[in-house]
Every structure is written in C-alpha cells, then in structure tokens.
Length: 535
Ligand code: 3UK
Image (cartoon, rainbow, N blue to C red; front, side, top):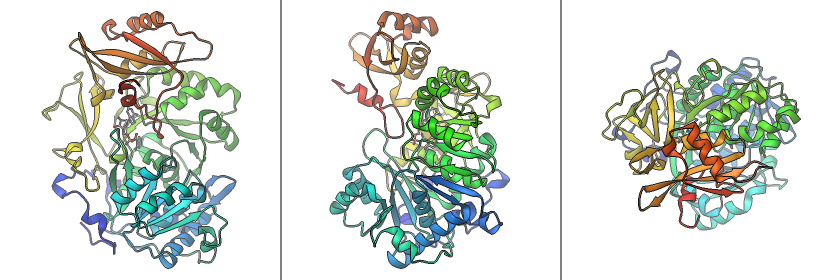
C-alpha cells in the first residue's frame, strides 16, 4: 500500500488482512491511478480550476450552488473541521442529514480534510447510530439540526464521539456561523489513492451492521465504469432521484456521477413517487435514479406531470420485474436502465445500455468488472444453471473488522449473496437472494419470478413471495399482495394468472392481502419480516 496521509491510522489497522481481500482488477486504461489522490480534487476542484466554476452544480431546499460555490462551502467547512473541531486526517466523521446541498458540502469537506466520511440514513435511531459510532470509532459528527436528538442520545452511550456540530442551524456555534468566519480556500490533504475515504454501512437482515471500507481511488473507479459505459450522461444533464446520499446508490447517482461529468444535481429531502414526479417537472430533470417500486408507483401518475425533460431513468436496489420495465416504457416511452450494485462494491457492476435492455434480465458485466456463476463448491456453472453470482473489478468488499469478510470474498471473488443464471444470450438473470430461494416439493423456486408473474396482473400493485414451512412439501409458496385501488382480492384469479404465466407448480398456494409491505429505507422488500411467525 502507498504511504498513508492519515495521522489517525484506525482504518489501515482495521482493514481485513490482504489475503482476505477480493482480487482487484484495473484492466481499463482509465483505471490506472497514481499513488496520491484526493477524490474531491478530481470531482470538485478540477472544474473550478478549468474555468468551469460558474456551471450549475447542486440545488435543493431553496439553495442553488455553482461548482465554485460548492467548492467555497466545502472549503469553509473543511477549515472548521481542521481548525475548530480538531479533525485530523483519518478521523471518522459521521454525517447525518437528508439529501441537501449542505449535506453534499459536508461530504466534500470531510474528503478534502483527508478524514473518513461515515454517512448515515436519516431514519436511523439512537441504537442504530450507536452501533455505527462504536464500530467505526467515530470521533466527530456533522448533523442536520432537524435530526439532532437521536444522535445526541447515541452520543450519551458512546463518548468516543467527541464533537457534534449542527448544520442548517441558526445557532452561533452552528456549522454555518462557524463556516462564515473561515476562508473559502483549503488545500486538500494529499491522501494516498488507497487511503480510506468512506465507510458505508449496510444493515443486511440480521441487524448487525457491516461497514464497507472504500478508498479515494474507488470513488473515481466507479465514476469511470458504469456511468461512463452504460449511463453515458453529459455535462448538460440534470440529475434527480430518491436514494439517500448515505446509500452508495444515492451517493454515486446523485452526487459523484453528475459531478464526474460537470452536470448538475437536484437533491430532494422527500422523494415519494408523487413528489419525485413534481420535482422532475419543476427542475426539468433529465436523469432519474430510483427503485423499481418507485417506477411502478409513478407510472400511473405520469400523465399528471410534464416530465418530457427526462431522457434516462435508472433502476437499482432490487430486481426490476419485466412488467415494471414495460409499464414505465408505456407511460414515458423510456427504456429503464437496470443495474445491480452493492454497498460492498460501492456501485453498479452488471447493467446494460438502453439499446441492450432485455426484460427480466439485469444485463452483462459492466466494463471494468468480471462476473461468473459458481456452484456451492466454487466451480463455474454453464449457461442456464442457477448458482451464486461472483464478481470482481476495481472495487470490492473490505469489511471493517468483520468475520463476514470470509463469506463475502472467496477465492478472490465477491459473492453478493444473489442466485443468478446466465441465459443463452449471455445476459445475467436474477433469481433471488440465495437465502430467499424457496424449496417446495423438491423444486427450487425463486420468489421474484412468481412476483413478476403476479405483477403482470392488473389487480396487483405490489407483492412479495416467500416460502412458509409445510409438513408435506417442506415449504409452501405464499404470496402477500397489495391490491390496486378499485380491485377486489380474488385468490383464485391470481393463482390461475400465475399458472398461465409460468410453470404451474410454482403458483402461490396461499395468498394474503395486505395494505402495504415492509421495506427498508433503501426501498428493499424485507422478506424476512414476512417469514416471522405471526407476521
Ligand atoms: C440487490 C439487486 C437485482 C442484490 C446498490 C446500486 O442495492 C445496492 O446495495 P445494497 O448493499 O444491496 C445489494 C443487493 O441488492 N440488488 C441491487 N440492485 C439489484 N437485485 N437487480 C438489481 N438491479 O441482492 C444485491 O446483492 O443495499 C445498488 C448501487 C449501489 C448500491 N449500494
């Protein structure tokens, strides 16, 4: 590794041993990185240096900043961090806020100061924040004043968190007041390209959050892979979307990728389907990032808004059912860009361009990444066979002090925990999370395939399919269905619809109607909650 600029050496000391890292592949010319690199220099300062500082950069909540203005804000905050709050390179700085320009400025300030950004989901409560603080030994926090109380409660339990400073606060010791007294210039810390820049937490389903460690060069690597080859956005684009900046889907899609091409981004504090549509119309947005369920919910509302500015729509976080792709195309004329990403790999590694879209398939490995499907013994499978998705590329899994590293990384491959197959055209087709595969009557059944069939029925708004214990069949296929407004729950009709769409043995033998389904803050269905007895 290159000589670190970190004075606080926590992250290097807590990386997994090198022999547990995935193999890293840098086989594109644009993935050659020197030994010194600060991601903020490349993504932010470069534009100002090139005389592009007057370009629109980030807006939201009534604020509208150019590249030069975001740079000035970030520099002032970096000065506060270093000269007033005592941050030294390598310290972990927790960020807590909704998607706002101020949150973006704080993120860049942390990166500029050579500290490590630990962004957290706005909905986290004190107990969950406490786990993050303890695990990453967070010393400082920048927190939206509106979200102060849960963090204050967490600090009570975790005094390792020495300093909290509030932004979007009128207080005399708030971040804005402090920043206004600091100069708008700052010399970025000359970090190593392999110094840790951020720790992204992923909760999974067990409740013990895992911290994934990513370097300065990883931030640039993801900008040079999927967005450059699949998204192909341009400097005139206006990005918008729903994922939080604390979710790497949102960090990339709503901050890093627009800035990597000199485009602008709209950050929304609230982005429920109707609000997102209204915001697209208001800002004449051209590139949208959100989850499959959000596209499904927006489709019937599209006619009420002028979203003619939109030219690219990205779906990730969960499998995109073919029915949702078709629905969106019908409503807007736009072909969705689907991509599977993971916090462990920072962003999307299998995807496609609009021209190569194929309903029901995620796509092919993104340039810069390699993938294959492995059996339980780690041997590659042939086309059509269902196995474990394995990936490698310039980014990969490095858990912060966590034994689960040995599960995620095997033989140099990142194992994402997804069951996939490669079809006859070389497309990767999602089946299920490996621990969500249903085994019924000796058959392996992937819940999402049945969900896709149900979703093509006009009465179905949302659904989730799980296996429930059964004496005779081992597991029974059970569906939870949320009905569209004005439709009645007809179990028999839905069962017949599935039998007519896919192999009849897969039909849900039990169907339960619900008014909503449990989801994470990142929009993922929480199937495990539906599996709990009495759920
Ligand atoms: C699932 C998908 C099918 C899959 C993410 C884009 O979702 C992201 O990261 P997470 O760590 O979850 C990873 C898991 O989510 N998944 C995500 N996208 C798809 N399954 N099709 C998809 N298109 O199980 C994966 O292992 O929360 C997504 C960019 C950055 C991200 N962090």
